[in-house]
Length: 475
Ligand SMILES: NC(=O)c1ccc[n+]([C@@H]2O[C@H](COP(=O)([O-])OP(=O)(O)OC[C@H]3O[C@@H](n4cnc5c(N)ncnc54)[C@H](O)[C@@H]3O)[C@@H](O)[C@H]2O)c1
Image (cartoon, rainbow, N blue to C red; front, top):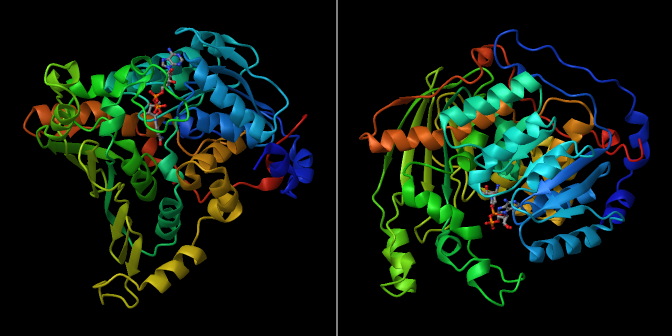
């Protein structure tokens, strides 16, 4: 769907202008820590975005180009080929403007410093996440960053303190919180269908060996940008995983479970323990693909294949998360939530709850009933924009819904669904799981980045988008 069709196909657009008119405001904070959970900037009616990193960042380009009231003003990447792809995406969306293009390795600073940018969309390799986020906030910009947004506890504190002191949004782009089954589960949790929540499970199990070891652009003369599989830029992920243990990518499975359980909004992580297998998969893959004297065959990888981490919360709940990107297994985020009355699990989606108190759930509901539940209890955001999101693409639509909600909140001066405390408490697991693994699974306390604010921050609501308040084009 191009931008024109997007506008035409939505009756709500005509009403959009009438929704304008509120002045900047701030919702009072909790008084303790955690003020960014309540923070809202004045409505940014025309949201001007700078996108840095044009591989994963193409999600941002495509979505902002199509959402009314948003404009991609500038883009930054090191490779011309990625601008060709971006231009195709913008042309398809029917945009009339031409974003500025930056190609130098430090040109992202120009985007952060630009007067005509409100939001920096950071989809770069991991090592650039924190430097860009800090620089963007110090330049007065709101910033959103790909997952995980930081890798150490210190980095997380620096992001929290910078966000709080400068009152700039600093959000992690955890798209899995917007998955259809994740949002269905959130809705069912809020309706109490599983009773009191007790245990959650999440994962990132995704065979990424070819992305770690395949030839990246500069090793692939004649590489065609339409080619689907290529390695990460400069092998950034392989380099990181060569030296780190623990769960370095914890947030896809964890984020949704945290939203079900109100982590940072009524509960919080207390401590974790983490255990992992040795490394077998990456190294045997490299040896099977490259000659024995090739650097890829010779390099050791520190990260074990399967990491399993257990978290306990302040209210006594438990969460299990797993990470495995180097084994030949089908993709799974597990996505399980269970409580005193029932359970939802995913991959594949199944659900069940006690139809009479105490009778138990010995089998999941039949497929037809599960499907009826999926339709009946579909999250309002999916009801409102799910079909459109599926057409826009991006992990089955969740990528678009994440950007849609982000744009909607910024355009309407609302707090964001995921705040800097979520970013910090979910991302810091990279360091804490590594510490635990390297110390025979010793428990690690998880800092309270809200400094007590979790006790008074209300749970995330069941938030959709009021289509009449989206897209203040021309305002
Ligand atoms: N949420 C998700 O579902 C999801 C999916 C894929 C990737 N990601 C995340 O997105 C980020 C990027 O991953 P990717 O798969 O696009 O990696 P990639 O290696 O395919 O692409 C990275 C891009 O960044 C560019 N880049 C590198 N240094 C730069 C610099 N100094 N200035 C500007 N651009 C620079 C490269 O040219 C490249 O085009 C990572 O953090 C990754 O974890 C998230």
